[in-house]
Length: 183
Image (tube, rainbow, N blue to C red; front, top):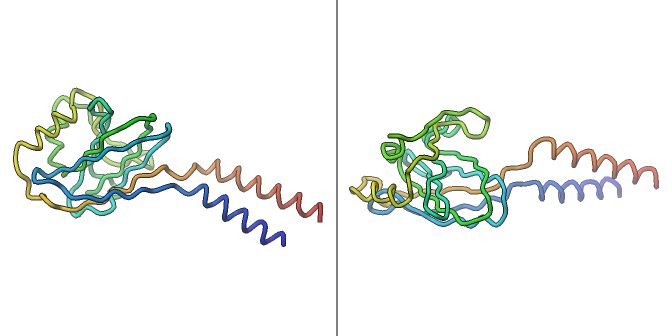
């Protein structure tokens, strides 16, 4: 009985600790990009991972005013596919998916950096005067051989850090100990 209760509790808690992942699929327009809105209900850390593009992908994230926040290009763990993890406040954001040719727009006068923090492992572009309107105008400046190319982005909140898992394990051990003493 105790083992069944412990197993059920562990499965229930493990289910709540899993990251919620929302897949977004689409295809690039005739100019080689696509955009979609992202409504963030609560302040949290969000993970954007290219899981389906057949091209060298780049992601750009803009706030509700159309100002550029951050872009992610190739990641070491994903090769030519981006992975970007970003703290976001509640609000509405625009996500732009394109090929790495957008780097030419982002790089001049823009701050770029490489990081190996275990999550964001690649090249990132932040801040500056780049806007959603400016980037789409740049990309609209010509057709793209990637027109119609499919992509898939998984958006989610990362699984809690190991300390949270340790606290859950400690709580379960306490529950088991209490059940044993009362039995």
